[in-house]
Amino acid sequence: MKLRDDVRPFRWRKRGKKTLDILDQILLPGREKWIACSRHVQVARCIKDMNVRGAPAIGCVAAYGLALAAFERSFSGPRALRTHLDSAARTLAATRPTAVNLFWALERMLGAARKILSGRDAGPRAVEQVRKVLETEADRIFAEDLAANHRMGELGASLLKKDSVVLTHCNAGSLATSGWGTALGVIRAAYQKGKVRKVLVDETRPYLQGARLTAWELHRDGIPCELITDNMAAHFMKTERVDAVIVGSDRISRNGDVANKIGTYGLAVQCRHHGIPFFVAAPVSTIDLDISDGGRIPIEERSAREVTHIQGFAIAPAGVKARHPAFDVTPHELVGAIITEKGIARPPNSKTVPALLNGEARVPSRSLSI
Ligand code: MRU
Image 1: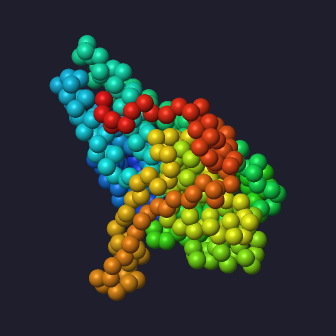
Image 2: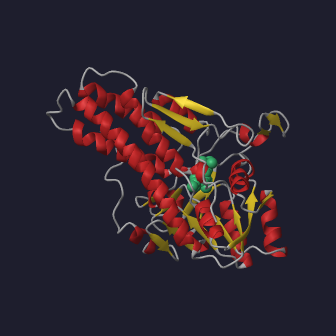
Image 3: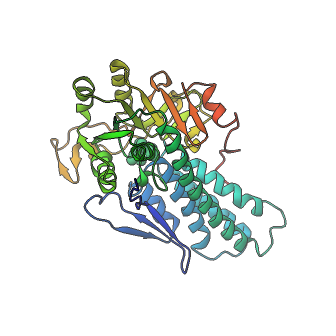
C-alpha cells in the first residue's frame, strides 16, 4: 500500500541566495505557510519558538542554519569566518536544551569546518571550501536521517503483531524528522504490512503536537486514527484493546533511560500496569553516551503561558502560576525496546544501548567551537 509521504518540515534552496524554508508548525493543521530563513538567527528563532520541532528535525535545521551562517555575509578571511561560525553555533545551541540531536548536528558541522580552518595554512580559498563542505555535510545529515527512519520503520514493524491497535504520544512523524518519522515511521511501515488496524493519538497537552500534527499526518496518509485526550489513555488500555505504545525520543542516556515529550513517562507506567509493550523509536543520533542515566538529561522548562493559554485563548485565571516541563524521563526498566536504524536494544540497558554505537562516542568533543 502506497502512502502519500509528501510532508517535509523544511527544504534547502541551493540555487540563488541560500535559503532554508521552514514549514511553520505553529499554524498547522489550519495553514501551510513556509518561513524563508536566509540568516542563522532566523533559524535559531524558529527552533526556539517551535515553528520547527522534534529532535531529528531540530538537528537537521540547525545543520542548515550553520551552513547559512557561512553564506549570509562576506568574510575578510578564514579567521573571520571561524569566529562567525563559532558564534553562530552558540546561538543555535542556545535554543532548546533537551534534544541532543541539536548538539550532535552542530558538532558534526563544526568538525567538517574544522578540517579546513584549523590548519595554520588555511588559505584565501578556505572560505569557499568551508561553505561547500558545510552545505554538503548538512545535506548528508538530512539524507542519513531520512534513510535511518525508513530502516527503523522496517525493524520496528517486526515487533508488532497483525492488526494491532497502537497508541502514540506527541509527534514523532515526518514533521519531527527529515521525513517518514521515527515512531510514526514504524507505524507507517507496519501499516503497509497490514499490522496496524488503528492508531490512538494522544492530543499531547500543552502544545497539542498529537492533535495538530500527528492526527494531520495520519489522516493525510489515510491511516485509521482516533484522537484522544491524554487522560483517556489508561481508560482505553483497560476497557478496549491497545497492543503497543510507540513514541520517539529527544535524548537517550547510556543506560537506556528515555527523555521524551511530557506525559511519556505516565504512559509507560500505565503500560506496565496493563502488560502492554512500550517501545521507543529513535535514530542513534538521539543516544547520548556521555550521559550515564536519565537523571542527568537537561529538561527544558517552557513558558507557563503555553499551559494557561491555548492558541492565545486563556483557559486559566489571569495571574495563576503554572508549570511547564516540556519533557520527562522514562526509566529504561519500563521500556520494552529501543528501535534504531542500527538495530534494536531489547531490553535497553547500559550494555545493549552502547552496543548500538559499538561503544563509541558519536561526537569527539562537546566544545561547540572550531
Ligand atoms: O517539544 P517537541 O515538539 O520538540 O517534542 C518532540 C518530542 O518529544 C518527540 O517525541 C521527539 O522529539 C522525537 S521526534 C522524532
